[in-house]
Amino acid sequence: MKKTILTFVMLAAMSLSASAAYVVVTGTDVRLRMKPSLKSETLTNTRGENIHPAKGEKLELLGDAGDFYKVRYKGQVVYISKQFSRAEGTVKSSATTGQRYVVVTGTGVRLRLQPSLKAATLQSKGVNVHPKKGERIKLMGEAGDFYKVNYQGNYVYIHKDYAKVE
Image (cartoon, rainbow, N blue to C red):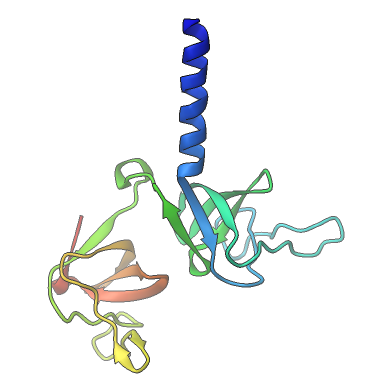
């Protein structure tokens, strides 16, 4: 009896953790890669044609790999670019994934398309997009006086005077 209950609890926990985090495909004709690199070979069928998940399709999230998510697609472990997908559900904490974030410390902060105060800003319908003070943004790297971040699927730069690493 105890063994049956323990088995049930273990199976329930495994299914909960497996379905807790996933990646939604946001682009069309997105290529799945065998390694987390744009230079990596792509997932293909037997005729050598690229296999593309459908826009809106959910893939099991296995981990974070820089500019890519490690996912399971039809039983195969592959990588999808973060530019064409978004993570949803319960994602592992930064302590487990090694992912770091910046926290916005100012108001009206401009996000730049290049690491320069002279660079164009991120805009929506001709209006500057500003993250909220206190908002956490995924840190992708550094470039001089700027942090490279992934803000709502856009790779942009925020000046170090207006953000702190968490």
